[in-house]
Length: 102
Image (tube, rainbow, N blue to C red):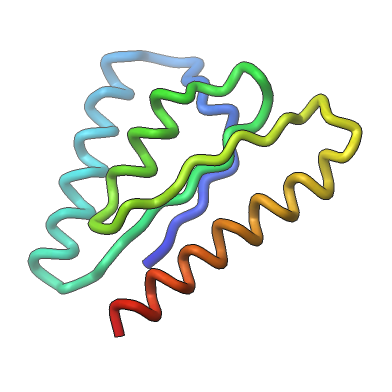
């Protein structure tokens, strides 16, 4: 299973709640792999210069396989092309990871 997040990574709510949610996600993915043999990877596209790189790197490491974090500069005039390239890269890595597990 591959998950792709497109986010600025900024939590506008509660840091304590975010900490708990991060731990719950990691635990759920670990248990899915352990109990049901569901292999997971997370890919994060950090949008805007205000993204939370620490959070997005954490998410990219949370799956049973290492995912990836890519910064996409939303101020760049070629944002559509940059976003397409970043999405393609995430999908390509996810497909390769899946193929290597078969």
